[in-house]
Length: 287
Ligand code: 13P
Image (cartoon, rainbow, N blue to C red; front, side, top):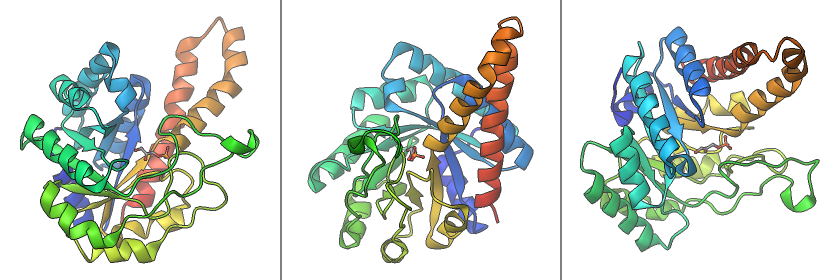
């Protein structure tokens, strides 16, 4: 069913829970995420990568996700992730996205605020806006591990959100959610993730806005369960989902080729891989 992303997140936080958000490059993944959410009786967020939304077929995918979200038995939001381009934001919302991350985190502070304000002017009050303060290192769509060349072997933390800027940023942007940099990275972590709970706590006391933790892949469950207590109501996953699907496909491919080029059977395994990751994650984040 349709929901406002900020309402979904706020009501989860009232129950000391957080809502997971999963990047969906395709409809098979989205179907499995929504089925897992329905089974758990919890709301969920479908994320669309900006590279997806920048193509005509990607916009058609957003339309399909909109239909899936509206028909679901639980609240489902469709969010354009990490958008820097106003035209892509506008196209994605026209296609069916109900929320966007207007991501000016790589820009100078004032330009970051200006991007969020421009997105608000363009998209209007009904589209929920997330803003990001403090940029994250790493690629949003590709992850490299330790067995790859040294310059690609995992990502080190870039900077941290400057908590002294939080009140000003939140009040001037008017965003409904705030993504933060607290030791999190996109993709694979170099070494063990070291989340800066002290920085997160410092941010949480300065704003009542729900906070968003990006780069959750690789953060152990026993860390993630602490997030909601710091007002982190939305937790974004992509890499771990991809790792699971690709490993499953690699393992299953030969048998399914031999079994009469059985693509339908292979898609069933894809669905299972996503479903089990989404179910585990929903359980981790729910109190
Ligand atoms: P990971 O790929 O590190 O899970 O990050 C996902 C994310 O933050 C999407 O916005």
